[in-house]
Each structure stands twice: as structure tokens, then as C-alpha cells.
Image 1 (cartoon, rainbow over the protein chains, first blue to last red):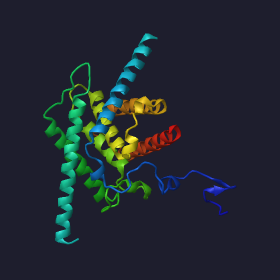
Image 2 (image 1 turned 90 degrees about the horizontal axis):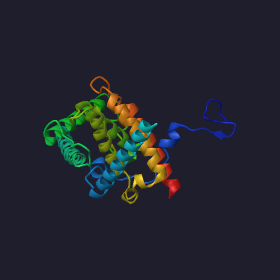
Image 3 (image 1 turned 45 degrees about the vertical axis):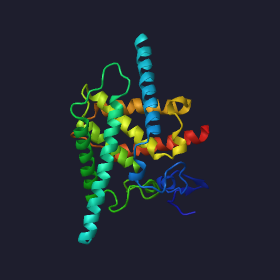
Length: 69
Length: 193
């Protein structure tokens, strides 16, 4: 065990490099460039709109509830 | 770099910028079509505003590349995340894009509406970066995801609403927030599969 490292007493501590350097990154497009990924996809756009509208509705409900108190 | 290589790089940069402009413009139009109590009105032609914001974004990206804050010459790929964090990954792209929108305030009706537009654009970018199969997940119909995203969106819209992006451009900090929400979303999806 080397003093000063992030591994002491058999315990592995969280470190930035461990997280970002993990080779398996689930559900990431890993072979294309941003130009190929950041394009119009009608299906995703529809989902984004649906989720965003739901978010706005949820927030309005939160405001109404807090105003009622 | 030879003259030919420089010309090619310039041409590639222009093509990327043009593609991103069309994407931004389309998302602005979709935002305008959202159901709302009062109509969403842009303070000018969407084409011109999207062009303005897109130009600002690429100028800013060029600035940080020139300043060596990110590694020059590396492509914006999702693989960037597995590198040393100095690359121009999706989180930095999202960060700079939404801050550029907030800076330009393209929508009439106050800063909150512009913060919502910026969040809408970044939410689309974020979702697009995922693989297609997971994009079929509706965040709002998944209770765990909905809770995370509602809190996240509410707080960041408040933050973006109150930020003066003319004098404040927290590009790196903002990109770290997006990286964290990505990790949280990823773990939640994995757990609820």
C-alpha cells in the first residue's frame, strides 16, 4: 500500500479518473462524431416535447399547491 | 499545418456550423409550437436568431480551443468522455449552447422563457446523445426519472433565469453539472430496467 494514494485500508475511494476512464459506458453512442449524433430525429424530438410539456404541467401544479397553502 | 490542411479544416468547420445551425433552428421552431397559455414569440426572425446564436457558439468554441482549455484537433465524440476531461465532449457542447441562448435572449416575454428554451434545446441534445433504444424511454412516465428531471429542470431554469450571461459564462461548471445528471440518469435507468 502506498501512502498518499486513494487506496488505503483495503478500501477503494471514489476518484474522478475512475469514473470517466471506465471503459464501459452504457448507452452512449461511442463511434460517431457530434455531427452524426446531433441531428434532427423526429421521434426523439416528439419525446422531448412530451417530457417538457409534462414538466411544465408538473411545475404549474407545484405552484398551485404552494399557493393554496 | 499545410495550406491544404488548413483549408480542409476550415471547410469542415463551416459544414459543422451549418449543420448545427439547421438543428438549432428546427428546435427553436418546435419550442415555438409547444402548447402554452400565451403564444411564444421570438424577438425576430428565427432563422436570423438561430444563426446569431450558432455563430456565437462556434466563436466561443474556437476561443477555448485557441486558449488550450480543450485539446485542439480532437473531434467532438462521445468517446471524449472516457478521455482526460479536457476534450470537447457532449457536456461542454450542451453547456456552451445553452449559455449562448441565455446570453442572446431570443424569445420575447422575459428571462424565464429564454431559460426554458435553453433547457429545451439542451434536453434534446442530451437525449439525442443516447443510443436510440433508450431514447424510446419517456422520462415523464418513469417515476424515478421524472422526479430527478423535474427537480433538475426546475432548479436550472431558475438558475438560468437569474443569470446575467453577458458578464457571466460559467462554461466549465455548467458542463460538470450535465456530466453529473448524465451519471444519475444512467444509473437510474440501469436500476429500473
